[in-house]
Image (cartoon, rainbow, N blue to C red; front, side, top):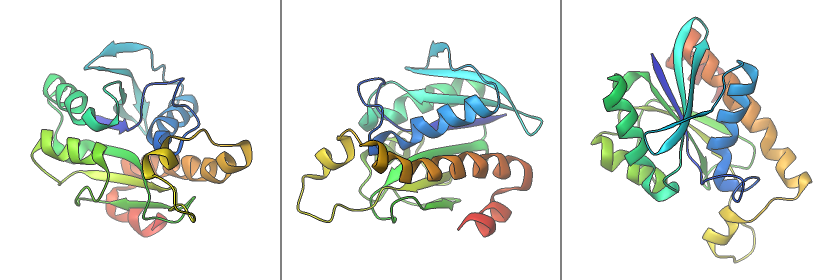
Length: 185
């Protein structure tokens, strides 16, 4: 069983923001695989289903970004999920807008949601997909940058990354993390 988590802030207020790329990927994955995200538990919204003949849980923590780890830890403890069956999707300022990167493990960088996840799980040894949102070209407060509502044209650039991240998750389940990293990175 895989736990696939998209990091973000509760919708609809934070829909169409750069910081909700994880939620948007979960929504795309759910739609594509006919999985309903309609259950509430683990301080989050989730749904269960099957992708590539593997049982999956799709989770969107509702704790707000900076406490995401609490929700994830509850789901892991409840379902007894192995660390190598966890995939976390989130936005990354240090990657060019619209590009995805897959990693087996690593630090949190400047991402507060990932700091919470690593702190709660006491490990960095889990898979993640980072969706590049780029760094603002002008001097702007980073919190404002990641939380501002995107115009349609801005969102379309990120939408292709969301679709690619969704495909990458399916490939990780089917082909493994190493093959998926070679394919997408």
